[in-house]
Image (tube, rainbow, N blue to C red):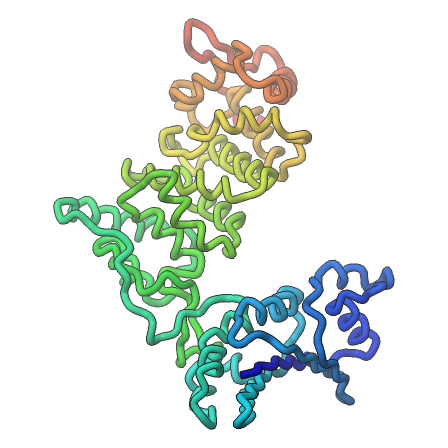
Length: 417
């Protein structure tokens, strides 16, 4: 059986249509004014058919291997990534005895996520057509939406009955600490099942829903919440386990997710159990980012440590566990001072070095005492020391904190001086 794929792009202005067609087929000598468009669109396999319609729309056609989803996605993914609007997708099946056409209009997938309503419209049963419909969400959205008939409440980890009291306490703690502020309907029930039973409705982020305008909804733990709460509830708190849980969800924006988590939850008086998961999850999230992105987040954490929400101690904060990494990264980066968060770190350090902190408890806290001891004894990387020297030396000598007899000595100055 032969399979042909036709994609009709929504109407475009003639000049733009010509440019897009040239870029898609890899035959572009793009003018400077369209350079941004050229960079946004990846070439796709050359179509065997190109039809320009009077209304400005454009139909492209390809012969593809039978039910080869990867070949189809090579065509559709660049269109989706470039946000080029698709008006129609047509699959033409020729099995020598008859020609069958599965024609899907934009309204079909917008209203139903390409599921049951379209299946009912099929004139005959066709294995290839069924396969295409099953994977239509991947073709249209570049996302895998799990079909309703394949969802079952999956056990992802087993709970030791002897730990039920601790698990109930963890559930209450997670319910109180709002990690991401995007809790969908059904979140509370889903979190309870996850923590107390090790159960989730599905590993997928998007789920078909006939009651939704878009035909789909987020997982009940949240689009970003699924992997995050899975990590925080896991009985195995190891770094390796956190990496394993997060790996399949790399399409999530982990940069902003981590920033939100640190912003909302860092400094809470977490239980020992939750903090171990929290710390290793953050470590895994950091390692999923680029070097510059991770550096920004480390500065974000340092800033939280220097500007706490209340009178808290370093044992409740993330940064002390990442301080050595921060110290080393300062030396590795060519331009460490370009971080968007480094200015706020400098402001916080100046307050710390000049006795203008929110509470004197800073100066007896084990981590802060050790940090200042290492600075005074030049036991930090050279670039980091230069950064700290610039701040410390900018303060009048009689206002600087000092290290005397194994402790920090200071004059507590007004925050508003």
